[in-house]
Image (cartoon, rainbow, N blue to C red; front, side, top):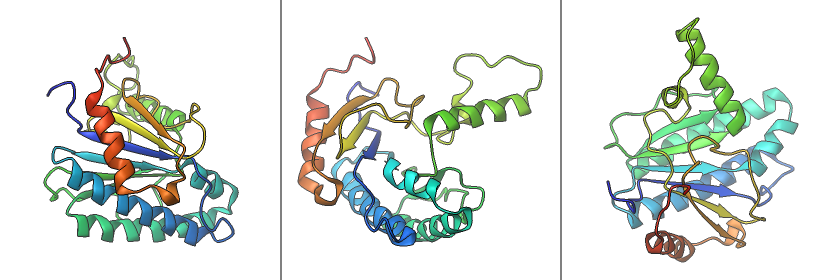
Length: 216
């Protein structure tokens, strides 16, 4: 793979959730926008293997909600995303706290392209869960560099090449802390509700104009 292959694009939205007073509507609104941009991304970049959608504002809303209401809203979102993934002809992977969600096992029949939905998620929490899984499977051993990847929510998925922050300020967020270490970062103040195919094309074109240094 060349330095400028774009195999994995991650979108992190920093705007406030739509319909914050209605948890289910907020989740479905985020799902709908994820589907819209994922469709554009997979069409725009033929070599794209993975598209990740992270909505920290929605996660904060879910964290404040009662557990049954949050689980119900997330389950509705998972079902909506399963339909969206089938329509797009891609696999769906649910990341974050997903034990109570339907369809947690990804569809493997989608030609290797995957839509990743991160919900009730934090990067630090994911790293902790991955370490716990490893140690449970290998008691008494030491976790070595390079062994954590297989236990992350994104196991088997290429690390993000481009992380695009949409809306809000460009500030550290608890998202893809491990996988995004060497990703290119792009940012737009455009609110997510107004983010369009043209904005996505500009971000992708800017990525291909860069000289990647992988943290150096």
